[in-house]
Amino acid sequence: MRRLLKFWSLARPEKQLFCEAAMLLLLSVICVRTIAFRHINNFLRARWNDSTRSAFSGAGDIELVNLSLLRAANLFPWKTLCLSRSIAAFIMLRRRGIPVVMFAGVKSDENSSLLAHAWVQTANGVIGGSSENAAFTPLVRIGAGPADS
Figure 1 (cartoon, helix red, strand yellow):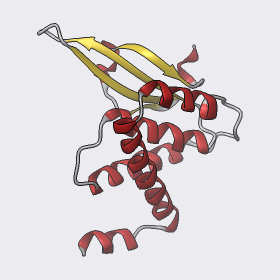
Figure 2 (cartoon, rainbow, N blue to C red; figure 1 turned 60 degrees about the vertical axis):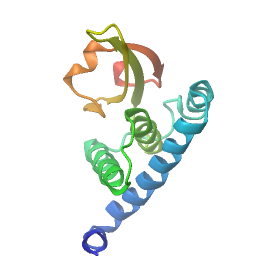
Figure 3 (tube, rainbow, N blue to C red; figure 1 turned 30 degrees about the vertical axis):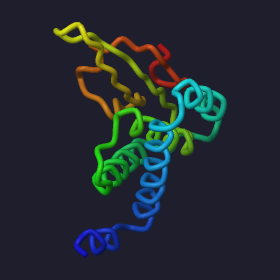
Figure 4 (tube, helix red, strand yellow; figure 1 turned 135 degrees about the vertical axis):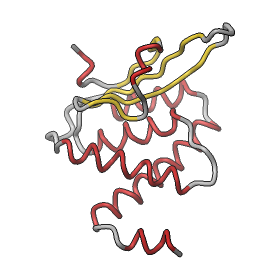
């Protein structure tokens, strides 16, 4: 009941972003678990790779998208993977015309096993990652944006 009251207290744009984030996050979780990544990669490159959608909206939109994704991820009873969150963030930001690049990378740990991680980079910073993203070697890069330089 408390979550429902909190949802109704949000402003209308935040409610819409939250609903969009929840649907895209659920869809990306299902896709990551059931579809080979090469098909997801091909879809994202074919549909969302161009940077000519619309004018850049602003840093406030990036923060609202990030906040909406965090709220939606907390709603689900399972833990969402960084790849699912990155796919959802990439699509939401691209729909708003914000230049963004999605990375998927690997690094080896002290046990000689590979660790994978995905993150999204905008002109204002990184979504779904931290300062340790530099330790990962990017293997997949989708989009054209602030990381082009």
